[in-house]
Length: 135
Image 1 (cartoon, one colour):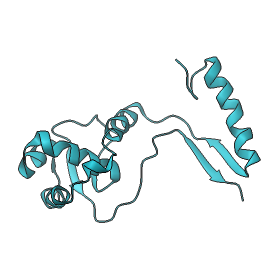
Image 2 (tube, rainbow, N blue to C red):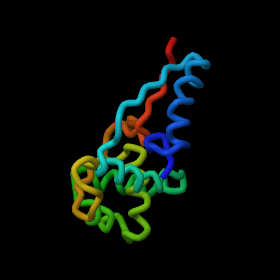
Image 3 (cartoon, helix red, strand yellow):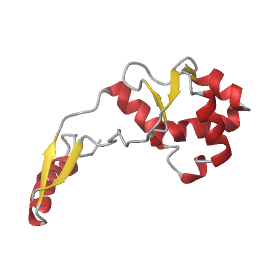
């Protein structure tokens, strides 16, 4: 396996090149650690629904109403329509932060409690690395 966190040649080489490349551009590079495996699995799943096609305005409004009070994921989806059609929109809303669920304790499941959020603030960083301007 190769990647920025693996011990293989390509990952190790990238790990050593990134800080130097960022420094040349005036940026600071800092590794902040690994994501919890459950959170990482949930974010990988939700990332598959980040495409704008999953932001269907009519269904989004319906789901905001359904999840105004916390409800189980599958029951809420079924209340909004056919779960096969609705779940991708739910997952897209979870990815965008329009709906909230506990992504840290358990993998997403039919009984996962979901609720609507008032304001959307990006909260997930799918990478374990942060890049900031050093100036």
